Image (cartoon, rainbow, N blue to C red; front, side, top):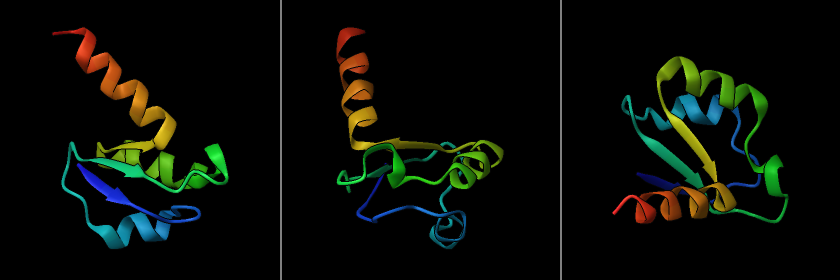
Length: 69
């Protein structure tokens, strides 16, 4: 799991991070809500088999894990 703090994670910034397959990247910047991750970055993440989460999505992801216990 990789935590970042960027106004908007772009496709190019995602490439620069060089995340491993099956990584989860959480953008902690929440001022611009869903806009903190570009659509192009989401598309590239699918190809790279990486999950991108906003902080709100991260809370949902954690709650989902907790409920499976």
